Length: 124
Image (cartoon, rainbow, N blue to C red; front, side, top):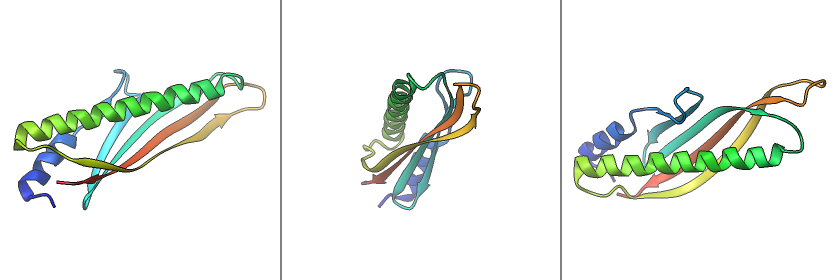
């Protein structure tokens, strides 16, 4: 169980939104619910055609994993610098989904939300 000062330090380490490429099209938000830390990645993707759809999904999935990993690393470093102790997290779930928001029969282009939702248990 986290002490009050550790909860404050964790809150300060997650109290920002990560902008992955500078244009604001990718975001990571964090939320602490009890002993669980929830990280959400979201972006809008434009799929060019059916043939390359799988490779485009794989690419954005890998990017989301990399961005979330970087966020967790940053949080751990910030937490340690404030408290002097290590933040221990255990991944409980990590799921992604795609929600198509625009597609037309005459065009191969599809616009979709890509989301990744990771839940981690705080083990301190």
